[in-house]
Image: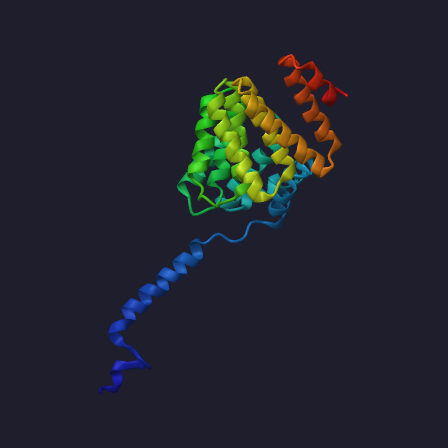
Length: 259
């Protein structure tokens, strides 16, 4: 064998172009992979659900620094600002902030924020009073998720859809959405939100004049509230039961929850 053909054990000169191409591809992939988000943004994201005002303050303090950040960081920052304001019950008055964020994540689906961007677009349009557009974005959020992905976000999406559908008097469609949210809460073992889901289902069945189902879900909500020893929830559900039995002119049964 000609020794000039051997540059490395097991590597021929003919294979060098292939190796070079593979090395270039690896370098490109490494360059394209986003670096971790700044720690302040991650901290703000973790605070959003529990202390949204603090999250808003952190984000305001970082605003000037975003100018020097790459685009993926700037878009994450903008998404967090919308998310924090939503959690702080600041009403959205325009879709001008969310639409560029949605468009960006639609173009960069390898980033994990597309379902969340769709969800907050739905929240924006709900505040703007555009129920059809809000429902469409909530459905897009569900379509962008795997079946077992982010059950917390999925439970919120179904809950929001149920609320909007109920407001449109689409009770059967709302039932399906609230049932889906209930299943998510069961997976998450979120007993408090299970109480709320049972009570919502009871109210919907009352609107549909299905008495047996109304009583079933209100009682399920009441029993779980008692099991959790949440007197505040117990009182709320007792109020629902009293209203229902009074509405049905079953005053003797209504007397107990009223007491």
